[in-house]
Length: 70
Image (cartoon, rainbow, N blue to C red; front, side, top):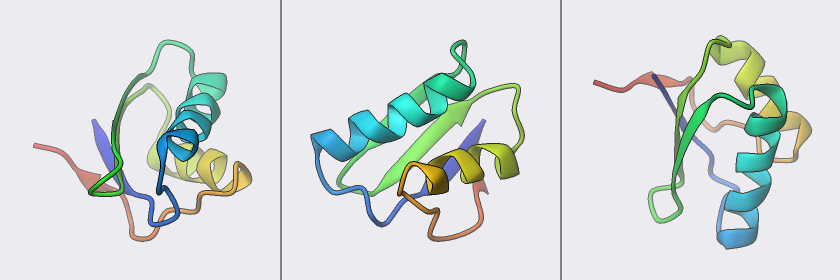
């Protein structure tokens, strides 16, 4: 499970775009969004760099290195 800080995620539309970017990469991933904290928690078989790249390509670069959730 990875947690990403996504500073550019500010609304429901942003959350939908972030979710779509990750789901397009890995349809079986589990995605949890916290808009207020600007965090995305992802359970996926893909590593953090691949997910970070997908978020950046969608226009939502990760603000810090992904943090393990635990």
